[in-house]
Amino acid sequence: MNKFLVIITVILFLLSSCLVTKKKYDILNSKDKKTIDSLEYALDKTVYDYKNAKLNNDALLKRNKSLIDSLKIETNKLSSDTSNLSNSLSDALKEYEKKQKKLREAEERLNKKSELIDKLTKEQELKSEQIDSLRNSLEEKQKRLVLLENMINKNKAEVNKLKNIINDALESFDNSELNVYLKDGKVYVAMEEKLLFKTGSSAIDKRGKEAIIKLGKILEKNTDTEILIEGHTDNTGPDKYNWKLSTERALSVVDILTKHTKIKPERITASGRGMHKPVASNKTDAGKQKNRRIEIILVPKLDSLYKIMNEK
Image (cartoon, rainbow, N blue to C red; front, side, top):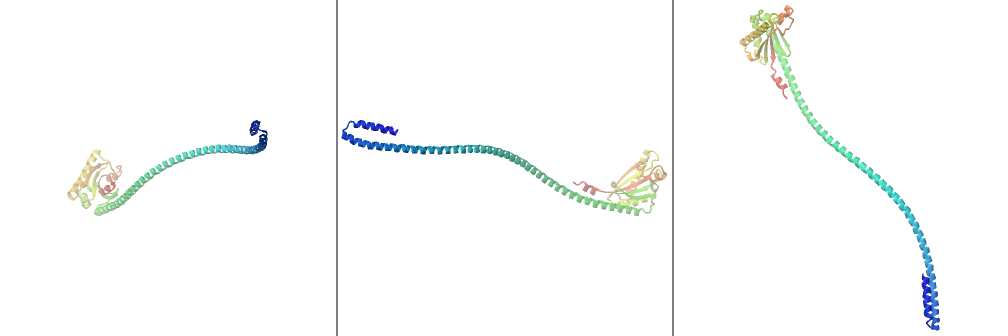
């Protein structure tokens, strides 16, 4: 392109030179030759520079192409790594979500366990309070039990002492006439018919009256006992008759006790048992004799014991 411009310039110059003198022409020709030489040199240098520039550009393009190829490879690798990282990140996120879910579930379980622990703790505290209450109640009951045992032992001792006193007071009477014994924590004074009554009668004989008064004098001083008087018969005769006879005999004993001692009537209970509580067989005369009797039963007052037992 530069060479073409140079030629046009020369042509234009030549055309213009045709219009000048030979001297001028020679001068101009000399100048033009220098100019042409200069232009050719410039053209050759331009071509040389162009070729060098082209070579440099080709080398640069080659290096750039190599660099681009290298960058493409690196880009592909980075793209692959990015894809792998993206997949890894996605897997990691999924795993993280799973772990987060497990963590939330674990927290829920922990909260439930904490609630359960709180509930169990409250129940334990309540049970501890109940145990303390039961322990206190047990201690209180143990104290009452000890007190009851002491009172029972004291009562047993007093009952046994009363039995011995009565035995001593009635020692003049034969064992075949009366018997003093302990049964179920009570003192029984069993007086047979021959000591007290004639057969079929409710009137008390002199010797029997003496025994009842002696017993009554002892009971005057033992005010902590209730007195039960029971009349008993054998099975001879009608049942109705035996009920009546046993009751009348019991009332006869009451009459003597209330008239000849200071025993308060409210301490005494009388009843007729007829033939329905035998102590021996009614098939023999000896057995029937034992069954015809008066039983004076001395019952210790257990009001204090009942009070302690019924305390809550």
